[in-house]
Image 1 (cartoon, rainbow, N blue to C red):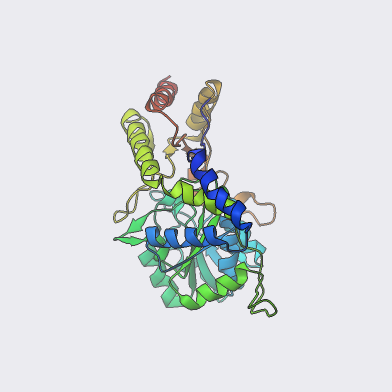
Image 2: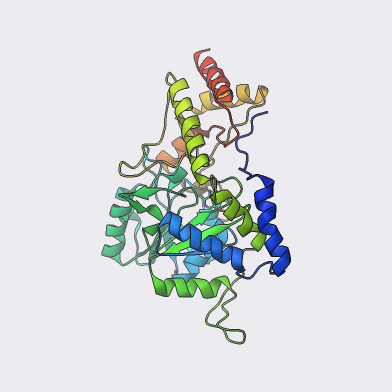
Length: 360
Ligand SMILES: Cc1ncc(COP(=O)(O)O)c(C=O)c1O
């Protein structure tokens, strides 16, 4: 069986070694020493101004919206994981969907201005599959209309643009460190900002709004993460280069073996490095996708329609909106298996089955 993904796990001795310290200290959560060490190491290795380690990527988005005090309408992408949209609704704001660019699969910056109204407070865009949005164009629009910018960087761990972390763009960027991500802490997330005042606000929000043991600075939630999660993060961080190298090798093998396929990959930002988080393909048609999916499943190989369906047309708590590019792409996009333990031989088999199905 070849699943769509498998979490990376470090040698268990490395994890247990870190847990010995947890047992000694009996400090399990509430910003313990491992969580602080992880924050420091991630801040340095990602080269970002300020970073907080939080419960997960969804809470990170909610915290970002709350910290910026956003209201009313938030312009966003319909081509993302549901948490990008649901956190907007959860924070009592209204998502306004703008169609995506067919080549990059990110929000189409040239269509944002037409969606701005007096009620627009922000733009929340996803760096889909880790491919950076047009951050320069988006910031220009935000400056012109006095809007805040949040990036959902759930997929973008380790991506730099023009030599600078992609997490440094916008007012706040969030990241997910969920077990399915290329770098993970089992469950986990990050909020990143260049603004030290925002950092302070986010830190209060993460800890119920507490300002000392008997005072409150603001409305907060429980956005903390535990020492057990941080230990996994520290153990995994030691292997990040090997993870990156392996994913690169696997990706290049897919590229080589799938040359004859009638499909395209998202056009990557030309100033950015790849992080090999996913292997997405936009196929010629939904029909071909369904055929490939079922042949692979017969061979116990599992792919994922990621992202399908469009968030603009399927959520029961929102009015349905038809968006031409998103509707078309989401019906024909598929992510192939990609994880550290996958072998080149398995990729060859997947590619052979895909090409044979197309050519039949
Ligand atoms: C684009 C995107 N945003 C947000 C999330 C939510 O992250 P988490 O699962 O850590 O809450 C995910 C998770 O898959 C995601 O892919």
